[in-house]
Length: 237
Image 1: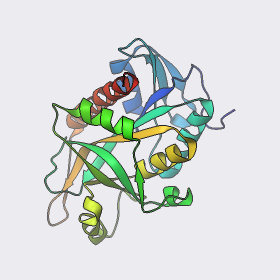
Image 2: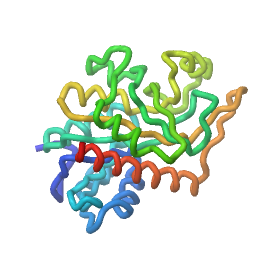
Image 3: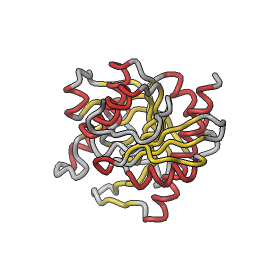
Image 4: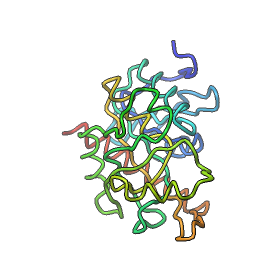
């Protein structure tokens, strides 16, 4: 049995993976009927309910950073997970991105320790079928598709490092979990993709501007709605 995930409800074969436990609860209430708590151990809240297509959907938080996300996804795979989409926030590297925009990650640059420890090369790609479903589900919203950077640091004391990533393989944004999740998907034969909302943008001088609480709530709901639609769409392909 898994060590950190203690299931109290069945796991669906498909899942949304937010980092934030509070977002997992909000999305379970928004996207599923009769959600049941799947896990509460370690504060990693997860829920399983019935999605719009009548099939089960699990929404499981991963916590922050690659090491925590790796533990959660490994144990979900042990329990039978087959498809998952990370739904989280990111900081914009591309100056054309605005707060609240969606980023569909076709690949993650592995600039973190966890994915590298798992044998990732410089770049880890998203599952093609889920990627196509995410692009289709994002239609009608402000979104772009491209590579992102996964890093270990939210507060990086070296601002020049982020500026160096901007032209690197056209990196659009930076976050902390995607490369690890995509790498585990490769190793486990599980379909993994990543959808992000821009929560932070950086002025030329390096000053950070961030979505307020209401904006983060709306971004989380959009992530969940689009991510769930992509999982439903992938099932019908």
